[in-house]
Image 1 (tube, rainbow, N blue to C red):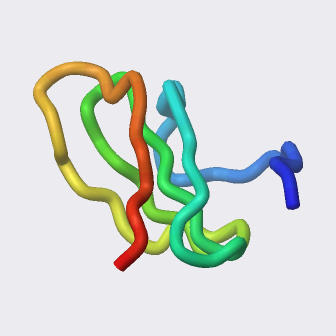
Image 2 (image 1 turned 180 degrees about the vertical axis):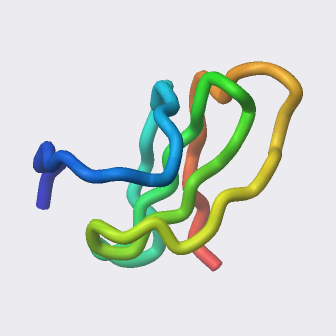
Length: 64
C-alpha cells in the first residue's frame, strides 16, 4: 500500500500536515493545519474531529 494523489473536494480547502494508516489499509487519519483530524476510509472522508487549537504536526496510530 501507499498514498496515491487524487483530486477531490471535502467542502473546503485545508492543508494536511501529516497522515498515518489506521488499523486497516483502508483507514487513514490525517491532521490539518487548523487542528482537525480527518478520518478516511478508502478515498472517502468519513468524519472530521476538532482535536487541537493549533496544527496537528504528527500522529501515531495504536492497535485497538
